[in-house]
Image 1 (tube, one colour):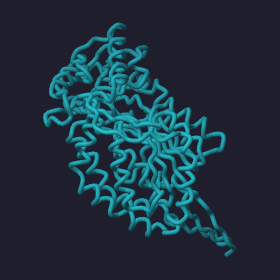
Image 2 (cartoon, rainbow, N blue to C red; image 1 turned 45 degrees about the horizontal axis):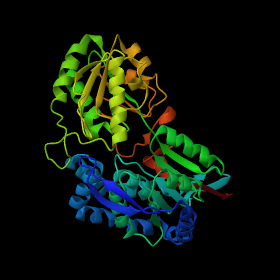
Image 3 (tube, one colour; image 1 turned 90 degrees about the vertical axis):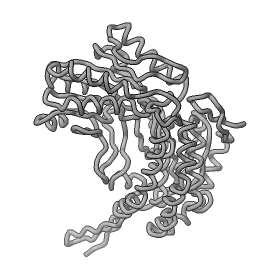
Image 4 (cartoon, helix red, strand yellow; image 1 turned 30 degrees about the vertical axis):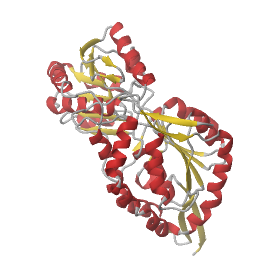
Length: 449
């Protein structure tokens, strides 16, 4: 099948390659994982936790090398790459405890019948992971699946095969042969994996791809966990702290070059504070320097590829052609797009409807919370949303159709909360007690009292 060459999106330099997996080989690969899985499951939760626990040290010991590889392959600033990897290592012990609590047997007794609810290994999990968080997202799927007693076959994004392989190689030092197998390739390998004899498919990616996976899985009723795209709104109420709201808007629109599923893609600001908010946002935008992620002064790296860059540029140009005003940024230089601020953006524009996944802040002025809520909810997406404001912020937040809503902060919740989307932004969810249970078969054993 040849090799898949991975390039640095900032420079175009080839930094490595991996062997492409033939789609015809995937059924046999899944069969190997299935044959290995029973022995792994038989270790029990505590036994598997002991095997997986050393992964945190393995990651920490290679933090510098992994971060450099992640930045060179994906483009995000080195500081953010280190943070992504460090968070995986630092959260591992807590995650093991959370999984243990989630999967512990539960006893119910109604006086006539005693029942025990078990959360057993499901079998073989297919994990299909994206490129924007190319180490954290594989971990997010692989780790709970393995801890629950499953085997995993992962297909990482063809854009970032090297960092995903590096992470998998560390995990494989902790687990038996064939419990974690990596297949490399593009859409063809992903389709073959979905159609293979796996029990569960965990996928993070586009809404369109998620719909195809769900349709393909329906034939054998495979379980699916889909974390899909977003078009996250930010609502700025008249009593909001304008400086904090604008600072957040810049950070959440531009970090990782906007290539984040919960980036702020639509901003609805009350007319009473709109001028102050916009002036502060434009001022904040000037601080977001674009460049190679290995440069310590860089805050915005390159787009992942030419296709994504061109998509973002087309959306900006289309918005301007239909009446939007470009008030900051907008320039394209090779793989880079300057952080961009658009005003006069209306709901009919493509940039208001379709996911952008680029460093663009789109501002719409509204007259009151009702209009802001109506426009924010006018989308098939519903991953995250944010409200900045005072006394009424919670009430407004409860009216937004999103799985996760931040009030005067981003959508990231306390430890133990699920990562969950609404509408077409997701099906099932990750993390938390119930998220970890998605990687298991619930089984009830009952006996007379």
